[in-house]
Amino acid sequence: QVQLVESGGGLVQTGGSLKLSCAASGSIFTFNAMGWFRQAPGKQRELVACISSGDSTIYAGSVKGRFTISRGSAKNTVYLQMNGLKPEDTAVYYCAAGSRDSSGISWRYWGQGTQVTVSS
Image (cartoon, rainbow, N blue to C red; front, side, top):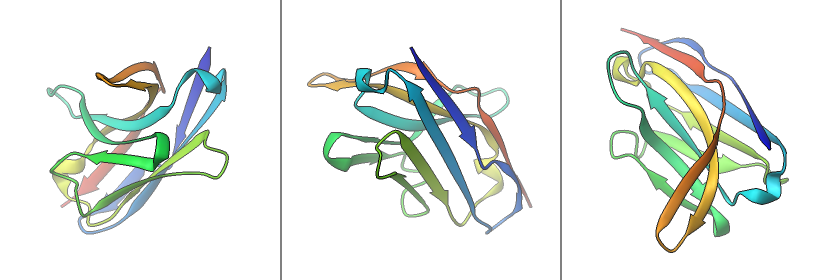
């Protein structure tokens, strides 16, 4: 099993910054990709950014250029630096871990989520 624990959410004004952290523990050898998803009230959960083997990254178009995903040196920690925050970034942000193969990423493990609120 894998446990994911997020931290770093909070309330920030438009244009501000936050950095989310996610630490994985347990059977960390069972996944090779980590990412961040978000879910706003009344909307579906969506991928924000992910990072996989070789530090290959993918970003949602709405956050490209503003958010940066990175991994810690131990590879079991992932960060999401969020700059230029907008009210539409308000959501619960979830850390996820999964396995990437030639067909894509299968997300298997999820954190509990951390609230990010951007005030206008």
